[in-house]
Length: 80
Figure 1 (cartoon, rainbow, N blue to C red):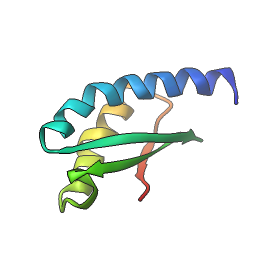
Figure 2: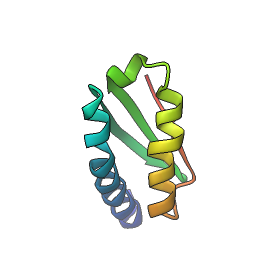
Figure 3: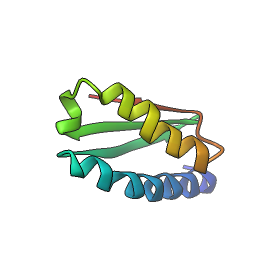
Figure 4: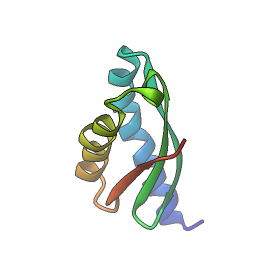
């Protein structure tokens, strides 16, 4: 893996650490899986995994935070 990807992954994890407490307040969380070609792959866990608002949480919360803070990130995908 390129050094640049390692740096991006480190920054992704830092942003997810900022978002995670909000998810944990509702009984859920997010797990980072990998970063490839501008796409961050995560898994919503706990209450977030089967919540009807999961898509909104992913797009409006997690994706917005990552895209705003890390220019290399263009999309976030939830993997079951």
